[in-house]
Length: 467
Ligand code: FAD
Image 1 (cartoon, rainbow, N blue to C red):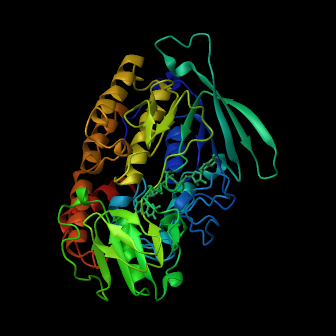
Image 2: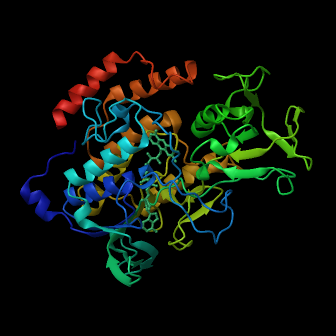
């Protein structure tokens, strides 16, 4: 994948001491890339149980079902028991470690497999590359503080250092110095709960999908789901299998035809599409933006996504405003201190191969194999994004890191910056065919062929070359 370096070149490269925060898929990719580039890496993972992050299913949920109390005991995972991937495994896996259906890691070789198969795949990746050996499990990063060096303002701003404070499983707090920090703490843990008139006094039960595990609690109920991205769509069908009726409400900008039909859809014909909520009523009803009202709703689940949260980093270095993390170069490198980077911020993307590319780029930038952006370049990159966002531009600020179809160009740019080959074109084509199949067969797409034999052939040629 990367331009091979000879021994002399490798010896001339800088060897940095790098802290990686998190050992989910992003942290694993970052740790692997740092090791491969010859850096001295320590990965910190708060979970005592192992790597995998969000793919490590946790049956427990938070006591605060909406997740709005800042002092609540937090649960990292948002996986629900029945979850199957929404991408075929070939396209989902890392380039360097194929996730092919001829090999099951936890006995589930389906192309759209269950969550424990992905967890087992990530564990196998960690084992294959010896990542656990440099990972401190059960260790929480409490703070990451920048220590400015005398030559800070020089062009090579690689020279900042970082004091990382962590707490190990026995409560021992350690402060250690690193040359660089790669933040991979995930962004599917902190519920985003939009405000609606009357929501606070509404008598029904309100939860966020972060705390959803199984549908049993909705049996025989009238349920409102707000948000129809991947989780909202899937959960509406699962909950409708036990609920009396499910109302799935979404902003119409996503699809102007949304909610035009009043007929129930789904296997039991009891899922009804609704536009955005206008207000919650004190008697248990809900009014929608088209003026329609549904009375006596028992429960409402917000499938409205998540917020980025970096409580361990000072706001002077990176701030989050309406889910826009700034200032960053290419959604990844701090424009204030480029030895601080973030893997995995973009959303509506194929995450693992993108994590891999971002990680290789950072590792090679730290070694000096590829140049670091100048301060001017980094700040201009951040400013270019800023002008597209509201109030100056027309992109809602909370969508600053939404890439969607732009992910492929983005990946190519990152590959170029990293000096490595771009991802194979079969990936984009398989992703698009899957998306189309999903739109045509939302209930069955995981078990019907997306007619992607040619893309599968491309995948297997690539897999044969790396295994
Ligand atoms: P995480 O997996 O969340 O890992 C972050 C890690 O950092 C965790 O292990 C956490 O314990 C650790 N951590 C956090 N803070 C600290 C700290 N201060 N100190 C030490 N450790 C810390 N992606 C797909 O490709 N296909 C899918 O089908 C798919 N479905 C999804 C379904 C759901 C319900 C969700 C929530 C996500 C889904 N995703 C899917 C996206 C998924 O999040 C990514 O695939 C990926 O797993 C994210 O990895 P990550 O490493 O960025 O974050």
